[in-house]
Length: 175
Image 1: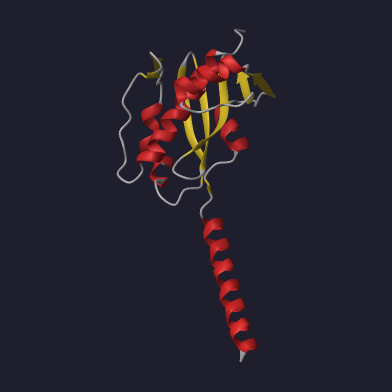
Image 2: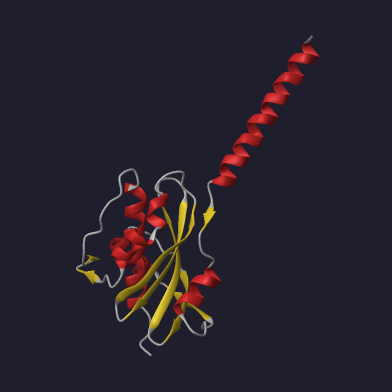
């Protein structure tokens, strides 16, 4: 009798574990790979470079974007266009974005990987086109970004990433 109870409990535990694993596996949607994003941005993809940030720069970046960029950020640069792969937290999980900046304005913003259970509408071009040619104005984007009902945290995350990419681009040495 006791053995049947343990077997049943173990069966339920295994079923629960498998369910949780399948839910977390489904929560990551890859819409565009980093190499594909870079191929969209450049005829010939440049070699990656690294922007190293000191503590003061990190604080500046955080004040502008609400995101701590860490001590280094990988980027690609060619023809005065920089491209960045940035992870920002939506509600609970990172959203991976590819953002290109040219002449201090966003040239492209693409959702590469979306891991949240809600708010995935932000990946669509009807939404991301709002960021085209956006620039910084006194630490904010120079335009309002329309919200999506039920996706407020994801919308805010994309705005933070856009501000961070613009700020990072402004830190690059001039060619």
